Image (cartoon, rainbow, N blue to C red; front, side, top):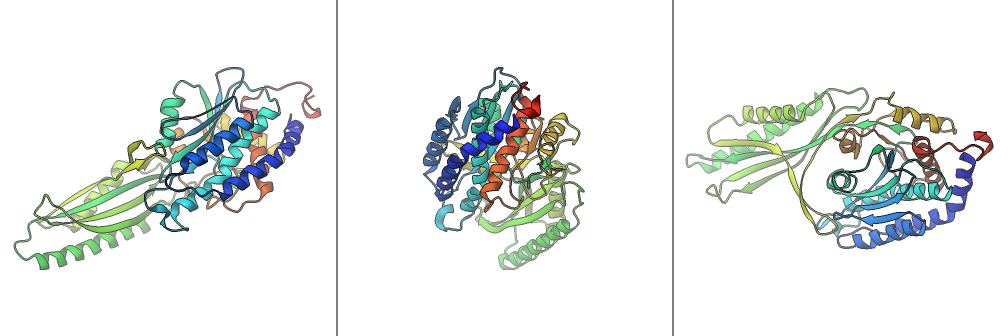
Length: 399
């Protein structure tokens, strides 16, 4: 079978190169997601996917059918959506993030095509999904598993994320919270009170920085982080026009930590600094309003669980063996700088989840064409090992 896969991959090279070039030339902006959707669904249909559809939040789903509806494998890639006014600069964040998504989109689609063209016998379906998301994982993957796949029997999930051709089995969690300090009674001396408020705000920022330096190291997932993303003043029209300080904090954390405890510590730190009458403190998980590519408006709380798959889990062991037996110098590791959909698929749903792909975890941009082919071949080996039917006599290696 492995000889057949290599030969069929060679026959796909022209189509892989052509689609990669089209995707690399595409700049995702507000309002043109439908063009990208058409490009991807058309490619899936041309490559012979048995079923191609999109859902109500813009996820693109292609299916290569096995002979039973059991032991399905889900292959996930990402489409990071631009946000309002994000396309004002050619170097905007969404453009950079979408560029980082492109190799995952290409390799996921052509992994399905390679299995289809090799006539591989699969016990279950291969579900190739390009997940829409905003600010890391979120609404897209939840919609996919809670709605589209809720009746499917999923054996495992493969994330098309950069792993430098290793198998990754976990990452830190992420929590975005906001500290709000309400200015109240200042006894008629507003100028003096504002000076005190500014001083205490700076003390709080210094204390948060100090907390960041003391966070405990995790030997596998790395050190947690605490970053102050934004500090601003707002006027509260319902409270005599008094000011509010809003401090937005981005916090990554490990399985040894707890979201509730993180928030409680932030509240306690704030109360200790703003400890005089005339201020009211509030600390809460930040809630973002997101508009999907289909125009659906959602409220998303940025709170993603840390996760770790056991290295001895059969899904991990079988995937590792499939690669190592085919000349991949592969080991098991973790993402230390990325938050992935594994936070939901394994962290919440407990579905076996691994990641495999070309590129360093900092970025998948600029990887070579040969690395794209290697990534496709590796994913195909993993999937065939997990749900493929051994077929006597397909090539010398199986006799």
